[in-house]
Image (cartoon, protein in one colour):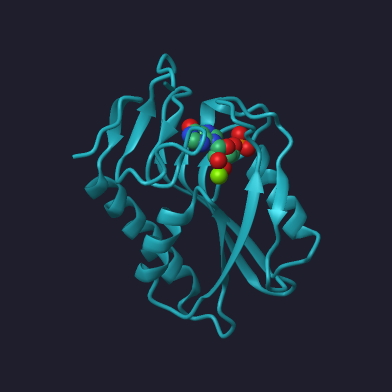
Length: 184
Ligand code: IMP
Ligand code: MG
């Protein structure tokens, strides 16, 4: 198995991740299976890509897909707290059920900003779903509506879509990034 030098410790293997996402898909299916208007499931790129692609194929009801690219880290392990919308949605969310799918909530600034922005557009309902929640990293209270996995402390993790300076996104597992590793 490919394990780059910058990996310190594998926290969640692929089987565990996929099982967690399957449960999230069941949760969404139960929530929206009787809808007359399909919910819009929004992927926050790039980090949520793998989570999202597995999730949507396991949802057993009609859905619509949309994408947004947000940016909060500037080549750093620490957020600058100023997330920006880099590319916007293509659909109108007004009056629709909306699910926002994110890779990780750390300070949760990014997710809060996007949710507040979407609320202004008056969706019928708004749900947030994260692959990994790090609740101890909050500066302001925030709880995602659904978290597949909750981590203790503040490990900086990569894999399954998540990166450190774009490294590690394609790893099939979620692992702690070694903060002492130096790029050659
Ligand atoms: P927040 O706004 O502090 O919650 O950070 C959210 C964004 O920062 C996520 O969408 C990720 O792109 C990135 N991020 C936060 N924590 C991690 C981590 O442990 N690994 C990789 N990216 C992270
Ligand atoms: Mg992200």
